[in-house]
Image (cartoon, rainbow over all chains, first blue to last red):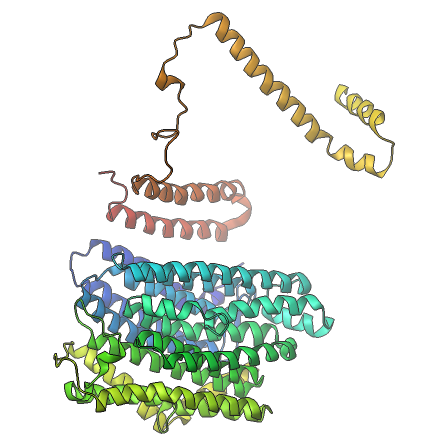
Length: 479
Length: 144
């Protein structure tokens, strides 16, 4: 029987689902070409859900629906992160869709459903709920990419993402079935205790390999990264921005739930796999990004490189290492959102500023936004005092503490290679002549949000203690 | 009674008694089903054709003899253009078809699953209604 307390734990999810359905209906009655009602209702939903999540945040870890749903410190922090990032992503998207003239209310409704999927994924405590959340998230994203029907590249990107995503989901399910077969439980906590008490069965590692493929695909770690460059480049920029930011938090949560909550006893097995994924991702991402001329594609490879760094914290296998990773992924989502926001800012109707050359001479066209982009690029490269530096620093510190000094050295080496292509963007902005001096046309909200986004990286970079303290405290309770 | 005798005769005749015998015995109803199905099917066709030959008039023409395939020519290039609305109707049909598939077992056990079961289905139906309103408002139900 479902108790009232359980319903209360799921209140934020129920709320966002109801509102998403309501907004879908309201949108069909709206005649407004700017879809103001849909847009403002969606943003209001995000704010209210965030309030609910924080308001209902439990004192200690609580479970609901036969232990298939968990609400703990990590879920509250990651969900709040998802709401903040999605709020900005919706704001940038509204601007982009308005400018490019294919504003549809469904974009925001699908976005809300994707966010619901992320929330479920973050709070999943059973293999089934993990899969449910993942599919809700992915299906919404496929539709969002394919939404601009006139664009052939978007259709191609959606098709690629869909086919590869389906294969990855299949792999993940196969691995889950193996784990279920051995442990006889879908619930992550029971799986961990069963593995602990029954010792090792070769089938466990077999299942783990397939689960790892699923996780690596969703995160975009080499060699399962093939979809990232094509999807990032092919999708409309506002969708790329959405895919590249909030879902990464959910993918991190998925890795945490499956590997740490469920398969912690197999640490020795997955640690080795993560080391390989991590080194390959950092190498491939950073080196191939150098030769890109399209900035969306360059940022896609940079994502792959960042995922390599993220895995460093996970593979250290300690609560502080997981906290480092969590700090890193929040940082990354903020930076990537800002960088794609810049591409949206420079674009206008019939023109996408997605080539590196479009950033030439930006300091003459708009000194302020050139400065914001400078913060974003330095932060991604990991230059102090910006937030990105601290992300890298905490993760590297944990890897060294876990005894992998050689791995930390490799990471720093590839990070230096990566610095080249970030700094090249800055060189284009400040030392090259602009091809055209077209004035930047953007609304006040867009300018304000992007400035806040960029300055947040500087301010949080000067005071990283609070964010890190939150990450450490929620994960040390969990572990 | 007659059936039981029949299957004992059948198995005693064919194989030795033993464990395999017992396993095979479980499959006897299936064999019986297939046999009855074959007899019934063949006899119906034979009787149908026979009665038709004796009592009917044969007036064949081209359209009557061609295989029916939902409005398309039976044999032509597979790569032809046809209306995307066929897909739309098919997709919309599947949603409500599945709804019925869920409703049947639910209705059968409704007295055992209590209020929680009742409201779970009501929520499911409410979500479907949202989708229905959406497709109606978007004009997906209009053929023109």
